[in-house]
Image (cartoon, rainbow over all chains, first blue to last red; front, top):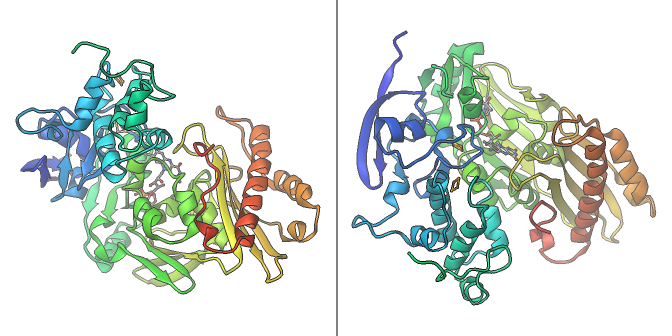
Length: 181
Length: 295
Ligand SMILES: Cc1cc2nc3c(=O)[nH]c(=O)nc-3n(C[C@H](O)[C@H](O)[C@H](O)COP(=O)(O)OP(=O)(O)OC[C@H]3O[C@@H](n4cnc5c(N)ncnc54)[C@H](O)[C@@H]3O)c2cc1C
Ligand code: FES
Ligand code: FES
């Protein structure tokens, strides 16, 4: 069968990109296979794990539940686009590193995109709001505590008390300066 | 897994969409937010020959407040409706629909068309007595919620029909609403849930009390509890009646008996909350109740 293909153009991390793909190409596969941007990870392909979360015109979406052709012409930000062009980590990336918010790193691109949007929309989330905000992202390694700690360290409302108490209730007792980088 | 191949249509107007749907007939499927359909395609549980992607039909991307309620167009996403519908019960329920990233794509009308018995919005539309506006090449029709949900994952839509909008009636003065559900994690489909609406007269006496239940029957279960709430001291009878009317199934997440028990608790909680909101002066409708992470 000769499947029809389309020329699909998107702006990815500020750069216009395009490739030829059939209509059934998932945005996740379009980014990874057609554009070679393998930072976006794919876990479940049915919306549950959150690994594939990218920003579409700034808002987090599941790239495994979106056809590339549907979002033709729109702006996509992937984990590759979060750091500065000179390689300086974004505040969210830096906080994940400082708080040991990742181990194997498989879930991390999805968390970073989700949390970037979460903190933009709510710069001072409470611990409950952080938990709700990341409830759609699964991590099999960290047990979440250090991820929560990373996000809370950036929360304007909570950060002072969290740092004074060595990070709040659901987080470990280690302060962010305890480890050597 | 990856979706099976399909012929893709990207109409820009409602007319083009209806023409494409008519031509596709039983082989056609509407693609709205894709948050239910694409998982089914990825798992190859669905394989429509023709996909009619309505995401470019700007005329469907509407959210209109009308005197009697809010009209939600087929492209209005959960997140937008949650932010700006101004409808307390809709907002209370939408907080529980999936996760923010899924709410950024999924549509309210798509959720109704999908007709999942565990979904929040069908129960909300049903308890409010709302309706769905439907169009096809041969005309338009209005389907009341009571006949829109035909069975599990089955709506009253016929091949060639597009759900254009849904109308959620607003609540009258001196009324209150509440929503509560229990899910294993916030954003998961619920084990059971209840949307309650209580209306009072000027003296504070109950004139109407209804609940819409999800997760406990093949379609949203709407129960009129007015007689129980009008009589003093009959609250326990109302809860017993709710448990009696539910027909939950058991599965790996919860037994039928547990769901029935839970439904009674959620009904009691939401009815009290809706009653309290109805009795308190001022814009108390902004209170959000229940849920898995509130406590
Ligand atoms: C991980 C995960 C968790 C979820 N949790 C919940 C939850 O807790 N509660 C909940 O309610 N939902 C949940 N959902 C589903 C989500 O709310 C969907 O957005 C919604 O059910 C379908 O809306 P959609 O716009 O994405 O529809 P689509 O996936 O595009 O379509 C769904 C079905 O409806 C049909 N359809 C859609 N729009 C129309 C229309 N205008 N006219 C005719 N037919 C139409 C399609 O053909 C298809 O059959 C979850 C989804 C995921 C992936
Ligand atoms: S791969 Fe998209 S949510 Fe799991
Ligand atoms: S760090 Fe391994 S899954 Fe999250």
